[in-house]
Each structure stands twice: as C-alpha cells, then as structure tokens.
Length: 118
Length: 499
Image (cartoon, rainbow over all chains, first blue to last red; front, side, top):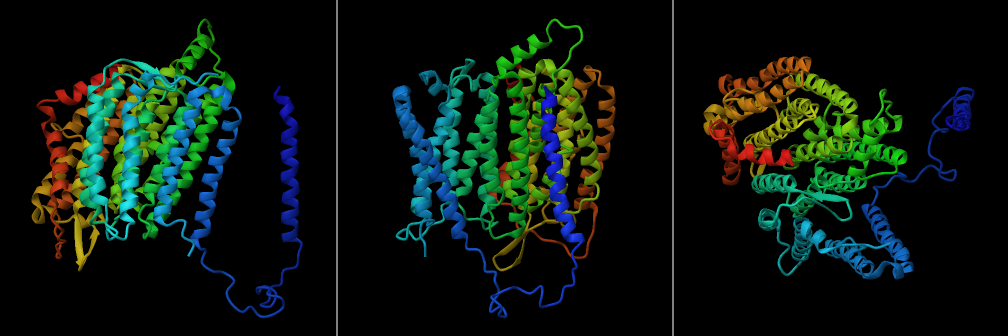
C-alpha cells in the first residue's frame, strides 16, 4: 500500500530539483557587475524623492484581525441556520451563548477604541 | 443527532462556569470604567486584582462543598473525580498567593494594564479544563486556551523590546509544538478512529492481549512520541528546552512566576492521565522516552547553570534540572511514583513562590521614580547586612532546593529516589544523586555571595512590602515546618494520586 505513495515521492523530488535548477542557474550563470546606478531604487527613471519605507500603521493589522474574527463568527452562523431544524432547543440556545461571548469581545474592542479610525 | 446537556453537566462544570461568568462581568466592568472620561480614566489594576481573589474564594467554596462522585461529563469529553477536586483546590490556593505576589509587584514594574488579571482568570479556567480532559481533542482545545493566554501574557509589557522579542520567540516555538501535538493526535486518530481515553485503553489492551510477540503499530508509536514531544516542550524539559532561558529572561517577572508555578503541575497531571490511563499498555515504550528526557534534562540543566551570571536564566536552567527529577518520577508508572511526583511539584511550587517573593522584591532606586530590578547574580552581594531577614529566607529556600535536610526539598528528592529504587532503575538514581550533588554547588554559591562576599559599594534595595512578605513567610515557614507535621500536604497528595 505504501508503494502507491512512491509516485508522490518522485514528484516531490522532481519539483525540488527543477526549482533548485532554476534558482541556482540564474545565480551562477549571470554576469553580476553591480554599480551604483544599477542597484539603486527605480522610480520611473527619476532619482528617488523620498524613502520608500514608512512605519507600518498598526491600525491596518487590527482591522484585519477584527475582520477575521467577526467573519468567522458569521461563517459559523450559516451552517447553524441551515440545520436548525435538526438541532432542537439546545441547538437554538447554544448559538446564543456563542454570539454572547463574541458580543462581549465586541464591547471590549469598542470601548478600547479599536474602532476609531482617526 | 441529539445534543444532550443535562443537569449533571452543569453541576460538574459549575466552578468553571462561575469563573467564566465572573470573567465576563470583570471584563465589562474594567473596560467600561477605565475608558470613561467622567471617571478620569482610572487605573483599575488593584481593584480587579482583589476582585479576582474574591472570585477564587467563591470558586473554592463551590469546590469544597461539591459532592464527591466520579463521572464523565459533556459527552465523555471531560471527567471529574475527587482527585480533580483536590488538585483544583490546591491550585486555587496557590493562585490566591500568586495574586498577592503580583499586586505588590506590578505597580513597581509600572505595568498598569488591568487585563493582566483577566488573562490570569482565563489561565485558571484553561488549567481547570486541561486537568479534566478525557479526550484527545479536548487536550488540544484546552491546551490552546492556555497557550494563547500565555502568548499574550509573555508580551504584556509592550514598551520593552526585550519582552516583545521573548514573547515572539515563545509564540513561534509554542505554535510549532502545538502543530506537533496535533500531528501526533491525528496519527493516533487516523490509526484507531478513537479519541476517548477509555476507548483507547480498551483498544490497546485488545491489541496486545493474547499475543506472544508484541508488535506495536508504528502509527501509534509515532503519535505517542509526537504528543510527548509537545508536552516536554511545554515543560521545558531537555532536549526541548531551548525556548525557556530566553523567554524567562525577557518577559517580566510577574509573568515568569506564572509560567514556572502553574504549567508544571497541569502538564504532569495531563501527562499521567493520558499516558497512564489511555496508553498504559504501551508502557515499555513511553518509559524509555521519559528516561531519555530525564537524563538529558538533568545533565543539561546542571552543567549550563554553572556558567550563568543572570539570575533569571539561572532560574530557567535550574527549573530544567528540577524537571529532570520529576520526569524520573514519571517513569515509574505506579502510584508511588506519581505520589513522589506530585509531592516534588508541590514543594517546587512553594520554593518558587518563595524565590519570586524574595528575589524579585529587590528593586533599587536609581533616580526619582525610576526603579530597576536586580538582574545579575552578583547584585545580591551583602544582602545579609542590608536586609538580613530576606537573606535568611533566601538561605532557607536555597537550602531546600539543594536538598538539604531537614527542609522540605530534601524529603521531596528522597521520596523520588526511593520510588525509583523500588523499580530497580539503579543507574538513573545514581546518576541523579551525582547530578544533585553538582547542582547543590551553584545554589550554595548564591548563598556564599549573599553572606560571605565583600565589595566596596554596597547595593541598597527597597524594603520588601507587606503582601510579598506574607507570601515569603508562608513559603519559608511551610518549608521549614514541613518536617514536623507533614500531614496537610501528604493527605492532599494522597487523595490526588489514589483516585
């Protein structure tokens, strides 16, 4: 039974080999003569005006995490609503518990000011 | 499919349910008042600290008054019996002492985040869930609650780069180890189709029952090894210990007290539940794993601790050493072994409470309103003249760790060695006795630095405050007076182990 996995091993090996070839050959066989104009940052042919790096605003990350949480909450609501008929009254009240816990989390982030986009 | 939640589930789940509801109430109280302009944005740290003590006292009342019967609840995911009741009671008492320690420490560390105690409440909830698991899936879920709160707690001091680096290391390595745990669980489930402990026990018994030559299936063995790897990572036992010195050094002291005091008990209880109940017939395999880790931990913990100059890293390596001793006790799968294990852990917790209340009260004032904690071992010079009572307490605590009679640490090591000798693991005992002699050196070296070293400039520290002094005196008195009347600790551990 394990022999059938041999094909996967050969596949893995060949992909590894191929990507290694592409990666290493482009490094080994190219002529690298770096001077200051070649390795400077490209900004439509001009000299760069300002540093391309700014500090990452943590608000973007916070919005992404909050979206993840509440989107997963909604995605749990969908299958519950579809099969509510089979679940009985315990199933009906269990979603209350789930939503209640998440609503408390929502109150917490609201009062902490995570929703203020200044 | 019927979802059955009967009244017995609610009754057995009552302590955890109370903690959950009090967490909700404290969360809304904390966040709605501390962000309120009319009240002047108060710092609610001490208030929520004392309120969590009240919560724990009420939970203690629930637990003491609950009736003793053994049962599984929530459709065989958790179990409850008398041993669990008593281990929860001891953990609650220890956490009340821990909160006393923290309330006095956290103002000095300038960490005014009230969510600290809420995360601690969640930690206790996670601990209660972990020790009452009866299923492989609920191991993962409850361990993940604990892990998540620990990741947040490790980086709770956001202004310190040191702390965020340590927390990030802990997070990445912890997530990795949880992945390994899940892999092991999925291998076992894939082979047997069973996740419940009783079912696994029956399955493995039938697998091995009437055979002359026992062939263990490789998936079960691999699953076992991977699950124990994840557990040993959490315990910081070698060779999975590399995260602990860096994390111990970087995170703030209050949180490190949490890591050292609480994780060991629960992971060992979980380990024993899983390996002694579900995988009991695979004993000959996991005993070898455990002995390998014990040798390694003892060896590494001792020899690397010799060259440490910072106190927190030293503490990390000495705790790896202690884990080596406790893992020796795990390797004997009988009641005596587990008795010695829990006994050692309770003494270890008392010692750690003592260490954290004595050493981490040493804060020196460098300029107005800036205090910094003693970090290097060399900064403990001449404590015998500047703070003689604290120095005497440190003396007793370190003599107890080193295993010097008649203090409690000696009896802990003695009982571990005696149970191993009963199981005829002679080389293990000889090795660990030699290692404990070597380890005694660096504990006594600290006492030498405190009492006998001399220096031109005397470091002067702030005097210890009342709450910390209470915890310190509790620890020191219980360590010294243990030899006179050990009944309290011994009876509790007897109940915990026999069930």
